[in-house]
Structures are given as structure tokens and as C-alpha cells.
Image 1 (cartoon, rainbow, N blue to C red):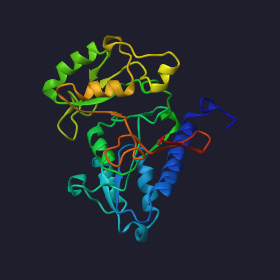
Image 2 (image 1 turned 45 degrees about the vertical axis):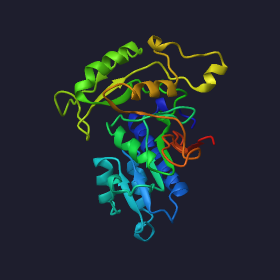
Image 3 (image 1 turned 90 degrees about the vertical axis):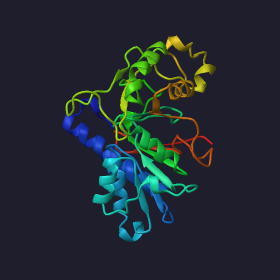
Length: 284
């Protein structure tokens, strides 16, 4: 694109962003929603609107044998409004998996680790993603980042038991997140935001999270109080804090590496500012 994104009028920028999301969603559905699939996870967020649109555009003949599993109220409404067959992850029989799950992200790093939870649905999103044989991420170019925490400055979303929130905030400060805070419910609600699970959300900013390849260039995570962490080390520490129910880091392995329980996507589709779609695949 010869004209930079920043030089465009705000309305045109917004239109390009929305169009890029739609392109990425349609391509992801084309590549990963196979005709024989019967169980499909549908995530939350603005990009997922176009995922559902792309699925519905296939027509009733293509989708009548499929059931769609939402991560929250938004995706539940999208599924129903599109005339797709709604089902719930709590009804998925033990030992069975979703064929594929589609979801967005707040930030994606070079290794396809994700930050999710900006919409406060992180626990349900992780349950649906890890219940799928393949998790596919769909986003726009603004979510691309070399390291988590580079562009997404709001912090890592952490779902916590309300009574444990003060102690979790204390622990986060000791770990180097000095500006962690309980997410407010304003403007719609006074006090803390309450998730679908009756929990609170703490947003904990950290310095950009390191990847294994950073150690090869001489960059190393420090001790706990330094606030400099690798993705895996921080995730492991956070989930072990008493009172933490779930965290908005999606990390570890992808569905190409393990048969079940994968948190990382097998592929991420990004709608770019120039109207193209960039595909990034997980390593095997």
C-alpha cells in the first residue's frame, strides 16, 4: 500500500481494519472447516463475527451436520442469529474433542503465543481451545507483535476468585508487575467487572515476554523480582498462585505437537492493512 495507514482518514482506517478481519476469517474457514467436521468451537471478539459470517455463507446444506460450541454469550448469540446449530462444551462427551476451534487474540508473538481475555472470556476460551484437535487464530495486523506485551499494554488478564484478589495483586507486585489492577466494570457497572463465572479480572502488565530464541542472542530473563520473564515461566508461575482460576496466556504446544489439550494455534491468519492475508503456521 503506497499510502501509510497513519496517513489515511480515520474512517478509511477503520474500514480497512474491518475488511482485513473479514478476509482473514474467510480464508481461515476455507482452509480449516472441512465438510466432514461435526463439532466446531466458536470464540469471542470482533474478528469472530466474520468467522461466523463465513461459516453461515456456506449455506445450510454444508452446516446442517455441524454443531457449534460458543465460548460465551456473544458467540452464542452469533451462532443462533446465523441459524447454526448451537451446542455447549459442557455437553461434549468425555473422551471426545472438537474438530476445530476458531478464536481471535489480543496479541500474538513470533512463536504464536497469545494474550487473550480482553473481553473477559478467557477461561471459557481456553476450555474450548484446549478441547479442540486444532485451534485456529484469526486477527488483524494490529495484533501482530514480536513479543507479548510489546503492543498490548493493558496487561495479562488473570481471572481470580474475588476474595483472593488482594493477595494475588501482592504476589504480582513481587513478581515485577507494579501496575497490576482489578479491571473495573465502568462505565456500565460500579466496582469490579464480574466474569460469567462470578470471578474478577486482574490485568497485570509485564515487560515484553521473552522467547527461547532470545537466550541465543544473549538476552535472558532475570530473577523473579526483575519482572523479566519468558512466556512459559511466567505462565507456570501465574497459574500456581492461590486464588487464580485461569490466565490469559495461551502457550506451550499446538495441536500439531499434541493430540489434546493444546493452547497454541496450529495457524494464525492476519488481515493486513494492504488487503492481503498473512498466514503463520505453528512449528511441528
